Amino acid sequence: MRSALASEKILSRILAIEKKLGRERVLSEGYESRPIDIDILMVDDLIKDTKKLTIPHPEIQNRKFVLQPLAELNGQLVLPKLNQNIIKLLAKTKDESILGKQSKWLRNPIKDYDLSKYKYIAIEGNIGAGKTSLAAQLAEDFNAKLILERFKDNPFLPKFYENQQRYAFPLEMSFLADRYQQLLEDITQFDLFKDFVIADYDVFKSLIFAKVTLQEEEFNLYKKLFHLMHKELPKPDVYVYLYQSTDRLLENIKKRGRKYEQSIEATYLQKINDGYLEFIKSQHSDTIKIIDISEIDFVESRKDYLDILKLIIQ
Image 1 (cartoon, rainbow, N blue to C red):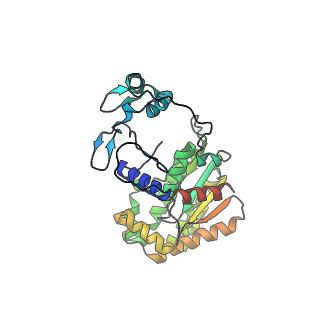
Image 2 (spheres, rainbow, N blue to C red):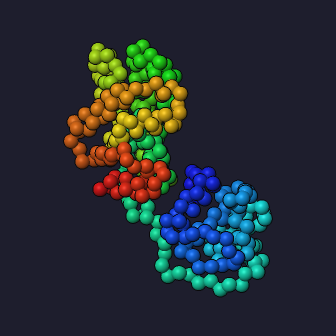
Image 3 (cartoon, rainbow, N blue to C red):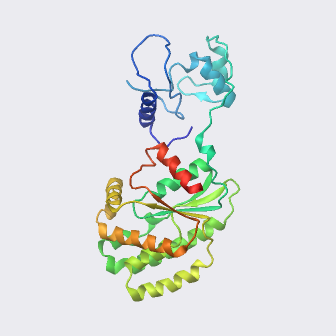
């Protein structure tokens, strides 16, 4: 499996799952019946030996029921610390157990969701809504080409939060040019090894933010340029808008700790929310999915993540 979590965090999740399924961990000698047993065998080349966690698992070489399936998956996989591959360890093990395959396969629930019917998915939302986290997770799970907004490279962004009136127009113009170039190149460029494209923003984001930040005369000029450029860009097959309450957005912004964002006010976020909802209402399209995530956490909760997938494919 793949995970972005550290080994200690993975262990914490495993223990929580075992407890939820009825397992009570007690000190005992030898094997005993248990509702479920989940072990961490290896994490890449990591070697770890603490009171709570040992990686690789110290009993791999002594357990045929672990070695044989691993050998079928990748017999040349080298076990860290022992520096021997699985095939050699299987040949040398003293475990003489006779193994039999189960007739039923475990099925990853992610396979029940088919996003490959879409060529281009846009994940949108306010500042701190979690659109990048969701886009990255979807791209990882469904082999999609990931397009992330390059806001960190924009030199006007920190200045804008210090003096919005002065830097609003250069900020929005620089974002417009960069988003246009990135989407035009990345969406239209075919990737042989990816099934579809997913982005953590849509081109109309430029118009929504500009309407909030620019003076009327500036916005009218900006809008003319935007519509000239937008004609060349493909539209997403599905547009997912992650709605979060303003209070939750402020919590998320504070938690992720970007210094230049800490001065963002609730009124500004509310204007952005209103701008998105006004845009969505004007589209009259069944390709738009509004998902209220104010009371859920799809990063920490697998169930919440799968619920979002259901709403996307509906």
